[in-house]
Length: 269
Image (cartoon, rainbow, N blue to C red; front, top):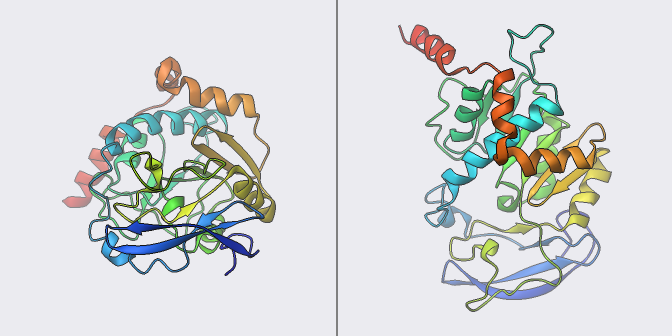
């Protein structure tokens, strides 16, 4: 068996129970550090509901992420409201956007954001689905990478859309964390069976090198970018997003809440 990221040989790291019924092996690459399964035959069962019931942090996560994304979009990628003199027409697409909550929150701030998701119903960002013929300035993909059955292929598809990818995933610690009993690493998610791909910093560095981009990482937030980003700036924007920096940013952007309402109301007439 070969690594799904770098194609080097893998070794079985452990075997565990998925969905309380399937005994499955997880394999670790000794070259790039990627940990994954062979064939995730249970995925159709795991995705009976696109959002698993144990994801109680989904709202709190989005309420934090939209502040981080707004600051990074503004300070690193030059997102501006259209009414600002010299402002550009930068756009963002949220891959695996789920219910559309993040897109709606970003638009409420003033970020030109659009939704994309093949598996989940768009509830909050209806009317702002991504047109695949347009090229965004920034692609976001939060809590998606760990769900990918063929990660290199699917990440490559994201790069075909945009060279700047802001995403989240918890990096696999070394040594491999506990995989059974009461101290099982929470991020495995064996009970819902949706998390099947786990990355180390080395894995992400390999992907960046293969794609000819730069990697920035701080805690669970990562960025592949076309141009080198100051690591101190990247970390600072994340650290202070929920400590006041976001509220300063709001003064420089114009909310799309009412203009979106007018746009959608006109379309419905």
